[in-house]
Image 1 (cartoon, helix red, strand yellow):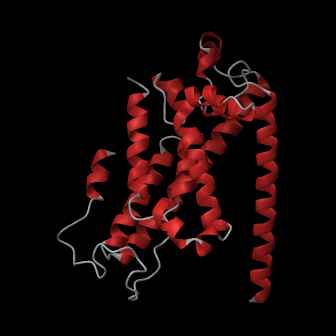
Image 2 (cartoon, rainbow over the protein chains, first blue to last red):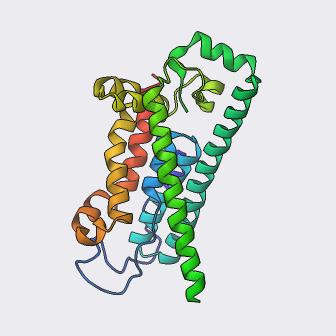
Length: 127
Length: 132
């Protein structure tokens, strides 16, 4: 995780950004719109379920922004695709886990270990 | 061409309606039942396997507490979730409900260049701290 983070830091070897360090809108040249980085969706996935996939989504959101503001618009768009993919994987995994949990619970097949955790550690409930 | 778009719009509307319905059902469940005492709420897989708390652990109990207006309890269960909630709602409003077009400066401030990095840092720090 730390590794990915350092890769997404500003890369000085790249071509200089067309709009150095200024927020978009100060000078209206023609960079494409910043691709959606799926940040809030990834936060939902991280906080409400689905670890660790939500965090992967946030990492890609960081990449989208850092690439975009360094002028690497194509790479940013690619990272945005991955951010979306991981957010969706996170929600899918969460849904799948929920369904499996529901089936196991309904049929009384929840593994003994799980039930032990439930009985011994009532404060441990969450998802 | 137009037909396809129309159908897509219908599907989108249907999906958001289904989503809203699910949300209402889920919130009523979380209001009526306490995840701290009722065993049918799913356990965090990360916690079940490692014994450590993930950044999302406690969210179910925190939602239950919030729905009963016990903010202090909610913060104790999962402060990150409580803090993230208004931020998520802001994000939905800015991106999906037209808020971003009307208040671009607000969007730039909260979802601008550094926001994702700040969020990542906060999540990682919270993850470490709550397990110390």
